[in-house]
Image (cartoon, rainbow, N blue to C red; front, side, top):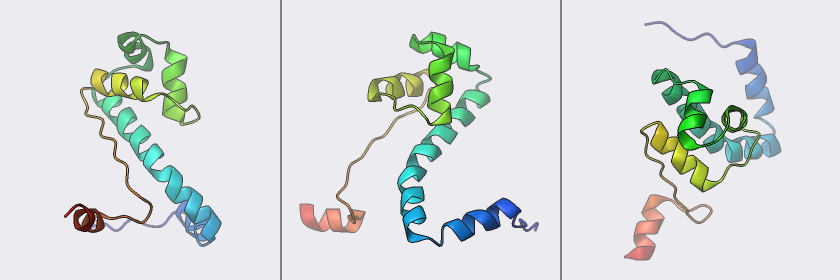
Length: 109
């Protein structure tokens, strides 16, 4: 079994996340960047370029680049088009702050 050695970046990140304000912002952005990572991985797995993806969904390559960098607030419509072009399902859910599945089940019972 190979253990992963902590990198300088990992140590730096861990020290930053000790700050509650930074941790809160990090946690708020985490789902966005996890979704972006999945889109990029899927596009690469399909050997599809940003230009090819853009053509399929009816946009231009710079729009795909902005989406993948995470510095562009895209529409749900565009996300659904991208997911469809990559043969992926897009699931969106809303929950009250602090609500877990078990508390939702109790409320709806």
